[in-house]
Image (tube, rainbow, N blue to C red; front, top):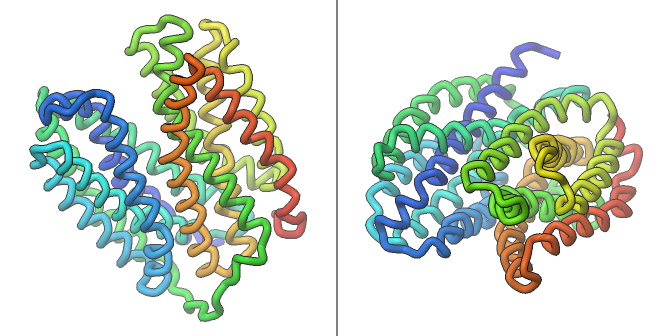
Length: 381
């Protein structure tokens, strides 16, 4: 394999760092933001719903656009417009304006994540899962960096934090674009891909609906759940949430490498079974085991990402795989919108989070019989 094939992969990683930093930069500033515009704390979750609503409807269109115009044009343009919107976002004076701009940012997010995965699809099959996980992990890394930097630079003013974070991370756009530009040019595949007769395609969509829904719901509610269960302070609970995100980065990279060694189908089976068990025992984990448990949970939640997206390239030509990835992320965004809300409803109905984690365990367990829809031939290394 040519070493230069990894240059655009690194560019895709950097593009997702920028994207993740812009997404994460608001999270630590949210209380100050709500106070400034006079919105109640209970409405804070709407900022995530607005983002993922825009993100949901843009996945497939931008995947098709990247296939026609090229990844570098779509990703670079998307990041530049996203940066401009981030500056405008900092001028918001009402809660409705903030939600509107987050919706637009979510829509433009579709121009980054799935198109950058096309770069990983070009890597040989023996390292494709690792490349996919590496590109995707840029979003996790950027989310953490953006949240930390925007808060540190805010000086108590959320607008200052957003503007400062925008300036710093936007400086990476030329670097990411240059690296992506080194990607090999390939002939566009004119043959349309028919997904309707592929049962494995439907399974992967269900998996991603559950996967991202569980990720967002768990990272949203885990600090509150731990605090209520073990009497932890908000600061301690937030610390465990950061552990979950950090192990997610390890899972996407190291997990991708392990997936290449063991095989995608085998990893999916072991992952779904292990995650179902981990979620089922969440309410009985002693407090002294919480750091290890949360780290394990973060690793397991993110582990299927490289395998699922790499399988698409095994099943379809490069263009078809990119469009299929857009559908998968659309399903994932739908899960991200619905699952956190469902967790909150179950908490109110059953007076606790136990039912929420039991539900997610059951959903993962139901997925196990569906894995054989991905045939052995299609799952081979």
